[in-house]
Amino acid sequence: MFDAELINTWTENFVVESPAIRAARHASIEHGVEPVTPAVGSYLSSLVAITGAQSVVEIGSGLGVASQWLLHGNSDLSLTTIEKDVDHLQSAKDLMAEAGIPSTRVRGISGDATTILPRMNEGMYDMVVVNSVSKGVLEFVRHAFRLTRPGGLVVVTHALGGGHVANPAKRDAVTTELRTVLGDYAADDNVRATLIPVGDGVLTLVKN
Image (cartoon, rainbow, N blue to C red; front, top):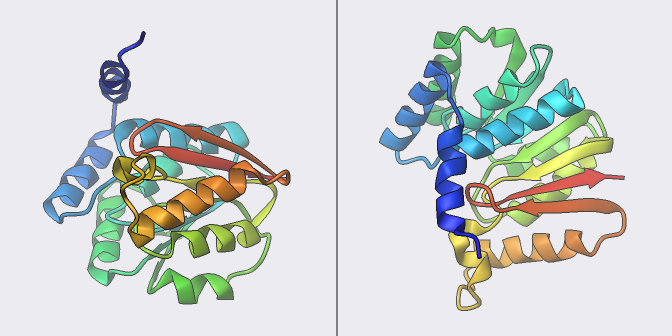
């Protein structure tokens, strides 16, 4: 029988983050924003590198920890990142500038994703990352599939909702939406779905 907690700790400690990403992580924690874990960030970067993704949308910038990991995966990647909190988005931009990331590689959009996503072009992106733990995640994932090209990826971080998804006693709106996302796409023949227990759980969906 393996020790899941020990494996998780070792996996997270295995990742070596750049000073710029560590700075963004520390800033996130200071602002009360939960960033993706090092292992999740490394996984996102690897997905970009493996697929050669060049056009990515991120829903939920926070202070840019996941953003920097995504950009690290491919020097040709252009990132569109959406964040409701204008101060968080500005901090993310400042941290990326300090990291030496050209502003031309990042388009930051401040506002509610529920109003922004419907105006974005269909089938134009290689990958969409849903990096939000707020109510509306189900709608975000549906929009993500519309935006992603055939063969592209939709990635949901925080997919296990802090462990609440696995607890039948938890029935809040966000947990219920996450259960719906997991259930719907696991049974969808038009999607290849993989859930991995890294960080807070990462759901990777390949659009056929």
